Image (cartoon, rainbow, N blue to C red; front, side, top):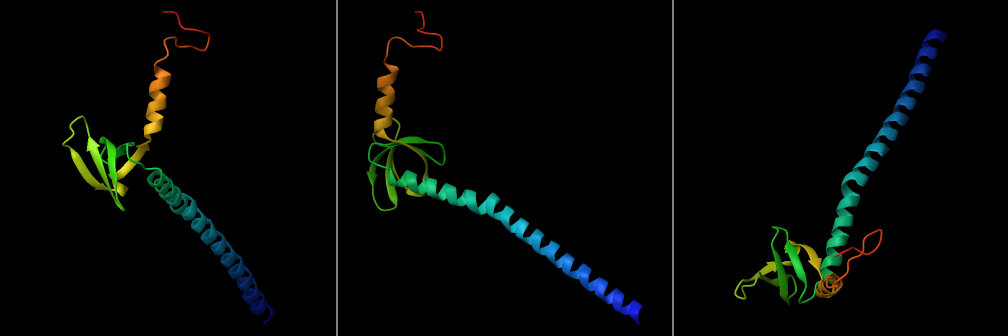
Length: 128
C-alpha cells in the first residue's frame, strides 16, 4: 500500500512540473508572436499615419506601385496626384496607396545644397 501511494505522489509531482513547463512555453510563444507580428505591424501603421499627417499640396510622393508624382489636391481619403511633366495626367487615389512622402521644402533644400561649386571630401576640398 505504501508503494502505491508513493507512485501516485510521484505522478502528481511530475504532472505539476509538466504544467509549469507548458505554461512557460505558452508565454514564450505568445511573446514571440507579439514581437514578430503585432509590434512591427503597429510600428508600420504609426509610420503610415505620420506620413499622411505630413502630406501637403506640392509634396512629391511615391505610390505603392512605384510611380512618383506631385500632390495637387487633398480631400478626406482621396489625394489627386499629377504624374510626370504631362499636366493632363492627374489621378485621384486613396491615401493608403502612398508609400513615401517627400515634402516640397526638403526638395528645395536639396537643390540649394547641391548647387555649391566646391565639394568637400573627408581629407579636404576636392580638386577640380
